[in-house]
Length: 398
Image 1: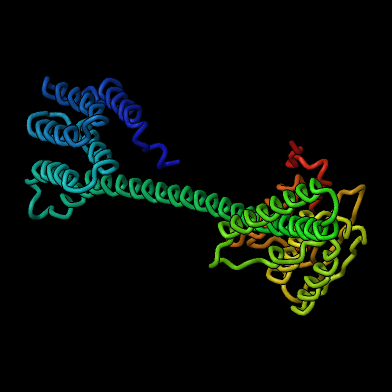
Image 2: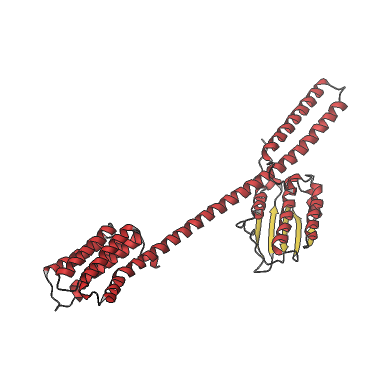
C-alpha cells in the first residue's frame, strides 16, 4: 500500500496535495503575531510552486527549494516552515526516482543550507546540528531509497513470475508436442501393420490367380505396387518422426493388435507390483475389441497412472485400475490412497506425464480428469474414450 502511495504515476497528485497543505498552513495555521515580510511571502509562495514542479523536474526542484530555504533562513524574520518541509520532501521525491550522483548533489546542497543556518551553534552544538540534518535530510532520503528498493524487488519478482509462467507454457507446449509425436509414431505402426498385411495378401492373390484374366492380374499388380509405395512412404515419414536421442516409450513399440491390450495392461500392473505397489484390477474383457488407436491410449493411461502412483504415492500405496466398456465408450479410472497431489498432478511441475495423457485422450475426442480424491486421501485419473465414429477429431473419408 505504501509503495503504491509513492508510485511515480501519482507524483503530481501527491505533490499537489502537499502544496495545498503548505498553502493552508500559510493562510490558516501560521501564528498571526509572527513577523512577516514580503520575503516571507515570496519564499513561501516559491516553495509551494516549486514543490509541484518536483513532479516533473525532481533534481532541479530540489536544488531550487534548497536555494529558497537558504534565502528564507537568511532574510525572512519568520520561521521558514514551508520551504523547509518542501525541501525535505523534494529530496524524498528525488530518492524515489533519481539515485546516484544527482541525489548526492541535492543532499549535499540541502545539508549545507541547514548547517549554514545553524553555524552559530558550532562547535558546541555540533550534535544538535547533525541531528537536525539527519531528521530533515537523512530520514527523507532513507525513506525514499527504501521505497525505491521495495518497488525494484516487487518488479523483479513480477518479472520472475512472468518468466516462470512463460517457461511453464513452453514446457506444456513441448510436452504436448512430444506426445503428438509419439502418437504419430504409433499411427505409423498402426498403418504400416495393416498396409503390410494388405500388400502381403495381394501378393498371395497374385500367385493364386496367376492363370486368370490378365486384367485381374493387372489390377492386383497395381494394388500391390501402390501398397508397397505407401509402406515405403510411411517408413520414410517415421525417419522424420523418430528422434534417435529420445527414449522410445513402450506404447510406441508395443504390438498394435487390439487383442494384445489385456496382456499389455497386465504387464504394466506386474511392473508396478514388482515396485512394491499393491494393484487391484477390474478390466472388462470387452476392451480387447477396441481399435488400435484407443488401445494404445488406454495402455499409456495405465502405464503412466501406475508410474505416478509409484513415484508420488510411494511403494506402500494401494492402487486400483478399472476399465469398463459402456456402449462402445471406454471408461478408464486409476485411483490410489497416497498423500494426494503430486508435482506432476496438474502439469505445472517438472514432469509432463499428465499433460501428455490429456493430449493423447483429447486427440481421440475423449475427456480427461486428474485431481485429488480429497485432502490427503489419494489421487484419481479418469478418462472416457468414445468410439471412433463419435470422436470430434475423426475425419470423414473423402
